[in-house]
Length: 84
Image 1 (cartoon, helix red, strand yellow):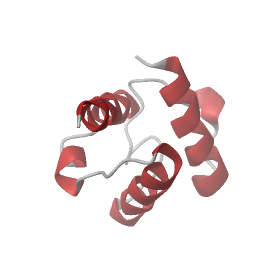
Image 2: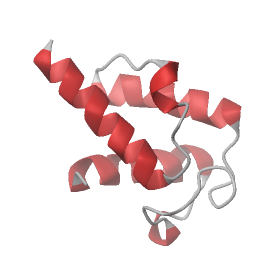
Image 3: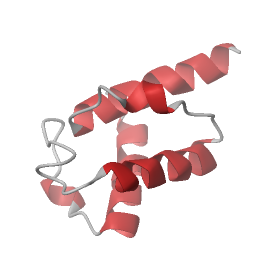
Image 4: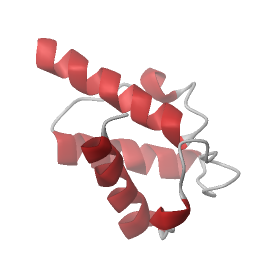
């Protein structure tokens, strides 16, 4: 797991959604543990696009259920953007 990316996303979660970054693990469930709803996930996608300078497809996030899933999706999106 990309530690820099993980820290960046934790910062977004803490700043925007008041999530306690210290309590987040890769197994933390986005909805149940972090209390994020669908609208929050849309906001996260927009913030990620701004901060990382990448274009993110909603379909990339459909299967993300945990924080670890979210980071894995973002790693793939970033790699895809670097290849193009």
